[in-house]
Amino acid sequence: MSHLLADDLDLKQWASLSNTERNDRMKILIFTDPDTGKKGCTLCKKLVARPYDHIENVHLCLAAYQCDFCDKSFKSRNLRAQHVHYNHKEEKKVRMIISGNKNPQKY
Ligand SMILES: [Zn+2]
Ligand SMILES: [Zn+2]
Image (cartoon, rainbow, N blue to C red; front, side, top):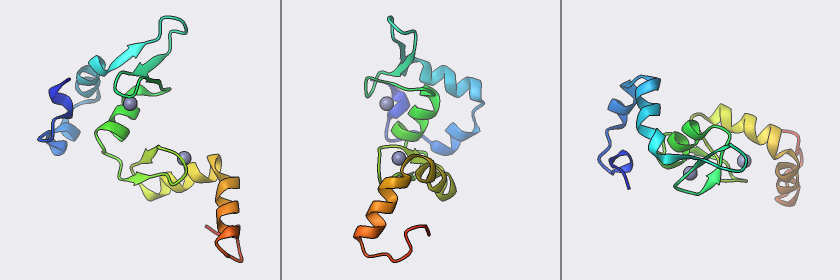
């Protein structure tokens, strides 16, 4: 599809590009839904709120911390913890209780 996702993409070099340059390269992977005008990712054919972040995080694997509950990934452990806290509070609690953790509030 594109050299952008080649195995030999130098991620350090990628990180040194300006936002505009990176967005410019990622543009070809983003489509606009004709009905809603929302942006989507051509790789997974999903509409995403922040397509550039999505491509970098999900398809360039710049984010190493993947959520246990959904397919989002994050650049730091903290961001992931925050995400779990706001989006998967109940799942987390249930999982903790089932696994025998006596203090489900504590992460
Ligand atoms: Zn995608
Ligand atoms: Zn999640």
